Length: 131
Length: 139
Image (cartoon, rainbow over all chains, first blue to last red; front, side, top):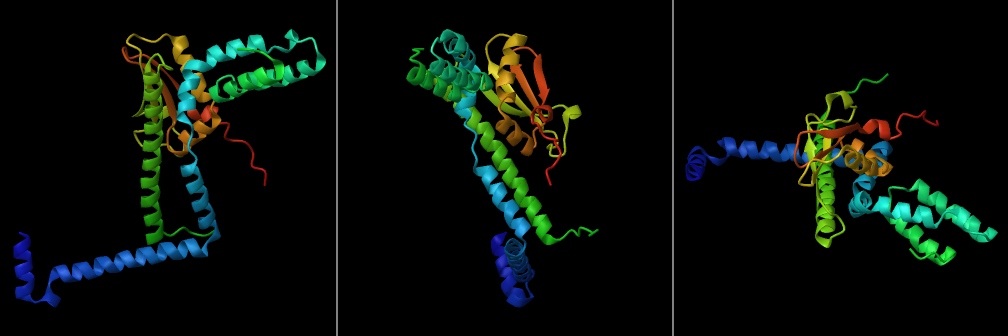
C-alpha cells in the first residue's frame, strides 16, 4: 500500500501529488495554532493568570494516604484524645488553657488523622499525657 | 456586551483542558487506590477500598459535571454488606475534607457513592451541598 503511494507520487510528479499538499497544509495549520496559543498567553493577562491557577490546582496533590488513614483510624484516635485531653481533667490554669486549645483543634478536625496525630504529640509534650 | 466568537484558540484550549481534566481525574483515582492498597498491605486498613467512576445521579448535576461520569464511587471490599452506619462514617470522612470535595467538583464529579462489595445498596451524597460554594462575592 505504502509502496504504491510512493510510486504514484513519483509517477505523477512530486509537486502535483496530493500527499505533498496535504503535508504542507497540515504543517501550516499546526504552526498557526502554536503561534496563536503563544500570542494568547503573552498578550492577555487574564489567560496567563488562569493558566497559572490551573497549574497550581493540578500540582496541588491531596494526601490520599491521610484520607484512607482517616477512614479507618480517625474515630478511634479521636475518642481516646477526647477523653484524655479534656480541659476538666487538669487542675492548673495554664495547662487547662493549653488543653482547651488542643481540645478545640481536636473537635474541629475530628476526621483528619494527620492533625489528630499532631495533637497526640502536642498533648504528650505540653500536657504530659501518654496515649 | 461583546459577542464571543468561536476561533481556533478557543477550540485548542477546549481540547487541551479536556485532556488535562482527564489526566487529573485519573490521577486522583490512582492516588486513592494506591493509598488504600498500601494501607491494606501494611495492616492499617482492615478492608480494601477502591475508587471508581460511575454515572452518578442526574439530580445532583452542576455546571462542571461530566457527561455520564459524574459519580465518585468508593467500593469497600468487605466481603459482606456494609451497615448504614459504616457507610455514613466513610462518607463523613470524605465530606469533611473541604479541599478534596472542591477538587472533585472542579474535576466534574457531582455525586459521592459508597458501596459494599456485595449487594446493590449504597449511600450517595450531593457534593455541591458540602463544598460551601455559593456565598456572595466580596467585590
